[in-house]
Length: 67
Image (cartoon, rainbow, N blue to C red; front, side, top):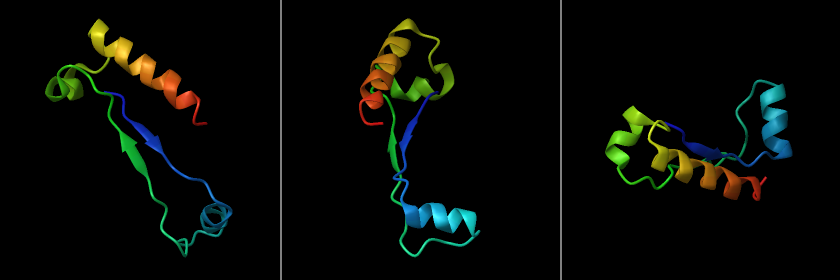
């Protein structure tokens, strides 16, 4: 199953990663699970059902606008 994550990349986070240190401020990670018809089966079936695939690709197109 495909899950989208949005991680704000700040200069402080980049510096913390480069120096192998924890950042002074926590990074808030947002998670988005596509609104498929049957979320219980989504973990197992993923994008195999055509309906799921359509929803996931629509979400991907919408997420591109945020990048």
